[in-house]
Amino acid sequence: MIETVTKIDLPVDESLRIVKNRIQAGKGKRISIVTGTHGDELEGQAVCFEVGKRLREQPGCLNGTVDIYPALNPLGIDSITRGIPGFDLDMNRIFPGSEDGAMTEYMASRIVGDIAGSDVCIDIHASNIFLREIPQARINTHTAQQLVPMAEFLNLDFVWVHAAATVLESTLAHSLNSAGTPTLVVEMGVGMRITRDYCRQLADGIFCLMHRMGIWTGEVIAPKKPIISTDGQVQFINAAASGIFIPQVEHTTQVCRGDYIGDIVSPLTGIVVDRILSPCDGMVFTLREYPVVDEGSLIARILEV
Amino acid sequence: MKRKIIFELKSLYRDSFRVTGFLFGHGEKSACIVGALRGNEVQQLYTCSQLVKTLKRLEAEGRICDGKSILVVPSVNTYSMNIKKRFWPTDNTDINRMFPGYDLGETTQRIAAGLFEEIKDYKNGIQFASFYIPGVFVPHVRIMKTGYENVDMAREFGLPYIVLRQPRPYDTTTLNYNWQVWESHAFSVYAGTTDTINHDDVTLAVNAVLNFLRKEGIIRSSGFVHEGYIASVVAENELVNVQTGAAGIIDRFVQPGANVVRGDLLSRVLDPYDGSVRSEILSPTDGVVFFVQEEPLVYANASVYKIIRE
Ligand SMILES: [Zn+2]
Image 1 (cartoon, protein in one colour):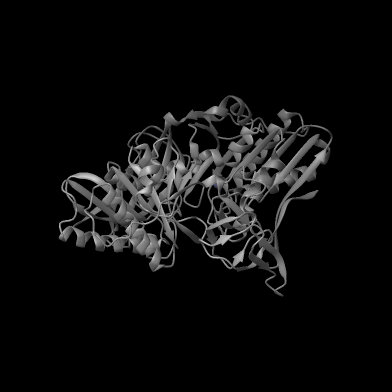
Image 2 (cartoon, rainbow over the protein chains, first blue to last red):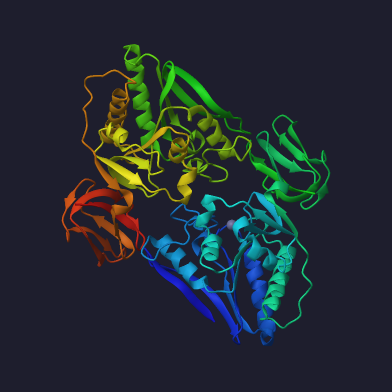
């Protein structure tokens, strides 16, 4: 059933609605699938579709509640805007929001209130338009003990346990985890695009987790065993110069120290301004997708092995 | 005066990105003044230009105290200014959310690091700041309660108000916060507008900084600068937030600095199609209007005034 999480009147003849689809059968646990906080991240759209479609096809296999929230930032998705249009604000920096705050704060508060109480929440992100990511969960060290075992069912390639940062305290996941609703952040693919294989992979994983939670009796795959890593094993490659980045490796390739990752070139002069080599042995789990780089732009992240 | 390039980044097709500073006097790093960190902070840029102009004259007249130096950085974000964008042109990141920066990190982290390395050792750090909501404040100095804040020094600006802010998570990455963590006395000066210029407020902000520099023994009296006000101290969380209620077109009836009493009509929100009244915004308290939001179309529950309760 389509339900309105919150509705707000905009200045001129339009209402903003944040909606969810509640699919319910029996008295089992509740999972919330959430995406679209960043309006330029679209991979989650295909995941929501895929999960909804399978639930429609096999309604008898569900014994619990699945809430699908495909668009926490509908104005952003509609206008190809990462943040909340009109506010120039990153929606993932305003949680938990407040009931009597500005419109954005109010929305945030209503969203948290609606999702809270789920037994699990999956918050799906799709990197940004610049970087392509392997399907991964991002978990901060404080919640690792509880969340890593859940993430292992999601059929992901990688679980990144990262240090807690103060600025991340205003994210949806932090607010929900603090309120006792276990929330897993998934990052995968690239902004403004759909990567079909990744979307199916995560949808498979969501059903594995639902099976584990006892709310899905349909067939599931055996989930992939993800690599679990901490910050210490992640190496960053940033552009040493501005230019056009031309990769020489495919995303997710295994590389050795010194392997050729790509070039930053100057189309004006025909000169390679920076030849990028791998600083270690490992897997390229993040790779630059958007060719134009400034000095400092992230080119790749390598998971050291 | 010495003009120096503090940080430079080469670009593919644009001229190099430069952060330029103007250094006055010699010796101890006494005060650093930073203007625009965002591309729309034109008032802040203009205020710095007037400060540079004045300090140039004071230096020529030998009125910068011996062994003291002052650095003014009018803009840290020329790239965004020149294309009329608020945040960094490519990735839309905010330089004022990147401090203390990281010299091997992403572009805006490098800019923050390059700037901060140059300015972190100044005894006093002053930033001409802007608010994320377009609007006008009564001129004030804002300091963050980090445990290092110094209210008495903030009085030296002679601005009418001092606002004490309890840091929130995102504040930890701002320039002001990091200056304080690095044991500089950090002050944010809010005077007037952001993307338009208000000359009275520019003069007020320049005089405030000159007052501060004089009282700190960094410049010698220029004689003609008004001493300013005896500041009232206000905690930011005690400001009364007045919201729109309904969304629509707003008609405002009061200006920053106005005295209001409880029940005064501050604004009406109108239906944008037929002009009928959607909500009347009444003052919830006796007090002084401290902030007025300035956009004609307002969202529901938008914060349109902040009032200092009497
Ligand atoms: Zn995201």
